[in-house]
Length: 582
Image (cartoon, rainbow, N blue to C red; front, top):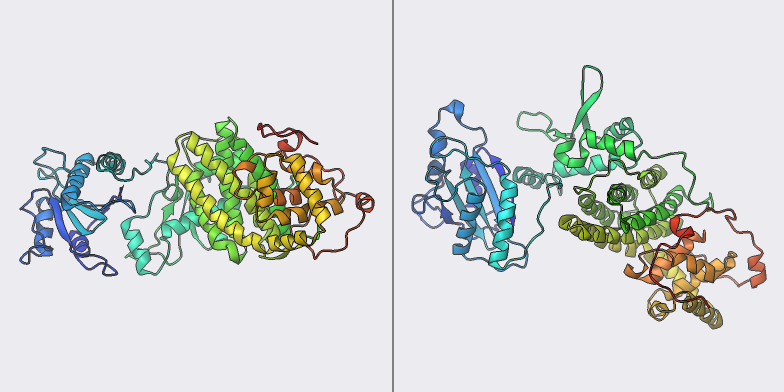
């Protein structure tokens, strides 16, 4: 059950909408289910003699009784209350009880207070009601409605339990401010899929992703086409900022500004400065990967980001909450960077994943002193490398990185769930679903090519790789061989052997990282890990004649002096027991 409180200035206009047909004729049988004094409030929905003006005048009477100088500018209190999809339909009597409990909990009309605000509850659909009140009490005072949204949420949780409805996750006051009803209506009239508040929040997040300095952040905002104003102190220091969309103006023709803190709690300038100071990206950091420099820059940036993301997943499985919270912030920036530069085929799903995960980056666990420079640098590298194509090495490395990002979001779900962060855990789970969809799209072409290569290998070679798998993963070998991409794994082992690797040793390294058991497809995870740590191309060339083993082993390794890519490369991270090597 979801309440959504807002305020306005036109009682008649709101009632005209509630009793009207709706924007798409979705309003059916609008009528009152309860009011401040049953029988005193006329019901234009059920009484042919009643009018909207009569109902407006009754509600506004305490407001109009005040001198004009004392009347509040926004005197209309509006709170739709909606049940969750799948809940049973409540009767009018049940909705009347819900209405009385919410106006009591919010301070609009407490039980037994005969001087409270006037209010009504209108029902025009099966799954929700609209509470409308005027914010002047019968005695001329204003109601005490401090934190009325939080109190309404708390009362809804009690009602859900008592009425046998779905019990939704409670908020923790770390969420971004939701668009108001007026903002949503304006966006809908303009044919927009997002409100300006939501568009600006996303644009500010994108500008912050991988930014190395405050100056670079503001420059990115301007490059994105936003109107930006900084609040400057007499000393010349920047105290804050606000942004607006070009063309988004109020009735007076003035830009509609939003400060960073009004977009999201972590987008205020002080919080942005904390993020920049704790995790300033390093443009001169040593490359993690030494793949062929002829590969496209977007492909190299994605390949280099994959082990950084895996390290973030490992930290989320640890005990350092502050470090984990910092990694979540960095992973959010990494997702924003991937979404901004994604191929067209995956851009929509990745944008949805980034929007969902944004909620998972904020909790009451702060990370001011933790270091997330590596993951922020990875985000910066992806942005600076530019847009990736959906084919060739770009397409393959996109799939490689997305395979890892799915595992990172799963680790985030577990981390939040273990700490009772219900809203954040749901957000991370939603992000994982979008990432899975994007991964399937990105991986289709390269995986098909690998499967085709694997099927063409001679049967003795395929059986030898099956024995390699049995040696490294004795308990999972049977299930892995039954997966649809087993042929792609044999093709990757074959390509690794041609490049001079020991397939068994390379596979052993690929299985020493956490998260293998949570993967949707173990073969997919292994394929991309093998290709990354073995410095193999992310795409598959047409099959060629095999060389003998001696010739293959005589070839120089592409990176003979390779340093370990992560702690898991030198120390086994996964504590689960494994079968003995044969």
